[in-house]
Figure (cartoon, rainbow, N blue to C red):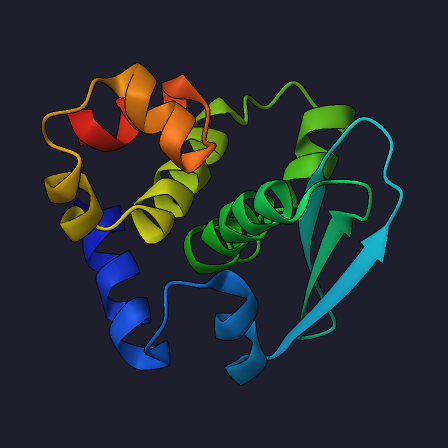
Length: 141
């Protein structure tokens, strides 16, 4: 519930659920690059928030990845998940789950879920373009 509240605060502050619009009012440097092995990542470096997105992703995939990385920025600001994932045995699954929760809460508001209340998870997944597991995460939260 803490993540959902945080998402709602951010949506009120920036008056949008579109992560691309949202970052226009933030101290975020967005870098498009052909990444290998990841779709995107967040880095906090010298008081700068830097988000890298794989430029080869579709616009919808970029939207989700950007929302996910904003989740890392708002929930795990000083944690370098890529460093922890590749250089240590620290389990980043909790961070990834929280960032996914943040992203799907941002991108699928309660009003949209209410609109789709008669639909199955599979149908909502097809309608929105988000993976079924993300929809399950959203409707269970």
